[in-house]
Amino acid sequence: MAYVEKQSPAVAAVRATRDYVHLESGRVVWVDYLKGFCILLVVMLHAVAGVEKAAGADGWMHIFIEVSQPMRMPAFFLASGLFFMRGVDKPLGRFIDGKVLHFAYFYVLWLTIQFAFKAPGMAAEGGIAAPVANYLLAFVQPFGTLWFIYILPVFFVATRLVRGLPVLLVLAVAVLLQVLPVRTGAVVVDEFTSYFVWFFAGYAYSGKVFALADFARRNPFTTLTAAATITVVTYFATSWSAPVALLPEWASRFAAAPTIAFSMLPVVSLVLGIGGIVVLVSLSALLSAFGQAGFIRWCGAHSIVIYLAFFLPMAVTRVVLLKLGIVTDIGTVSLLVWIAAICGPILLFWIVQTTGFGRFLFERPRWARLER
Image (cartoon, rainbow, N blue to C red):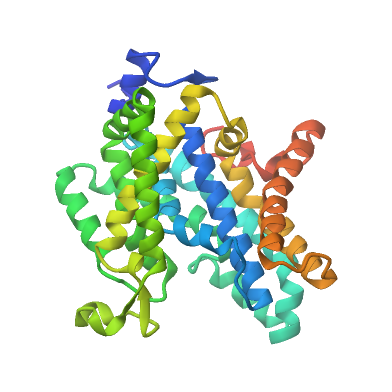
């Protein structure tokens, strides 16, 4: 029997109504904006947190990573699941090649690259066996910033396995896992329980997400008012702290400090995640409608390039700025490190595209594919 590719409601809507979203080069532009917001916020988190940890103090950019905390990863995973309906039922070989080996290649490659820079420091602290042991451990315990690349294939496989079950049943279990404060120490388990609900929601309710984007494009004033309101609520939720003693016993067992941010409380984090998705999807749709902030869109279309390569320029810039002491304001240092962490991968990508050398860094070669 010939293979017939299934279409998600979102894809069908795009093909049926050309003004539903802008289409350029076969890409849905507002989704690129959404991914752009997410990758910029993720890099901001690591840049700012790294500077503040090294300096031992918070800067004025700390408020941005706090307010974006409930929304950046939920929106990132939702965006990753939006078009998975098109690939969930592909023949097993094509599925493994495109959704498992693809990310496994980049994980192993960039894990090796990162260890090439980190191994000398590890060896100096723990002997020659330390980097070897840590490298091998990284195949079962995702390493550093690469955990997102590691967990995506897990989400793809899990969704394929449960695709025959009622959507509401799977969503209910995913919500329960998100609400329960699971803290096992195993990155895959902890991040799966925290974020699978967002990926599955993007996969199962892509049509509703596209409808939200369409509403935002058609109602800019209402959209901006709602986005501003949700952002203000999120600000207060991330600023307030709740005593752990007030939590139910089942939740307080997982707290690592006597207080916890209100935004991190069970159920509250889920609600704020939904609100954050509404904000980012709506703003992305508006920007695509008016054709503004093209840099954010470019970052979204090349999010994997930035995600894989931002660690080195970020680390080098942080060390140089803090050692030289030319800039003393922690917030300004954080801003400069964030800019360098974004611009570094873009420069590397431009060099690769211009010279043709090093394409394997961002493009999977033929030898690493099942279908050649």
